[in-house]
Image (cartoon, rainbow, N blue to C red; front, side, top):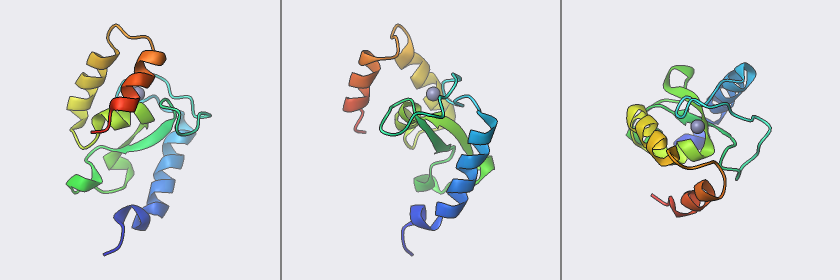
Length: 109
Ligand SMILES: [Zn+2]
């Protein structure tokens, strides 16, 4: 019945505003989010659905968290616990910047 992302547009904007107003840190990597950055910057702000919509999750505050675009892409439809471990692993030994950007380009899964 239509595109769920479109149908959820209003609630998604509410959730986006909720986290933005709190200037919350990324709930995947735990680092601050620069809320002035804009896509496609990998460190810009997105709302992550804790349980992905594709897996039956809903758009609401209880099923969402503030995240970096990059962290959100790493998570995909995986669990939050998996994403936190994976992001920590990928960031280990890397400084944010060119290495991460290259990784972002190849993260097509
Ligand atoms: Zn993050």
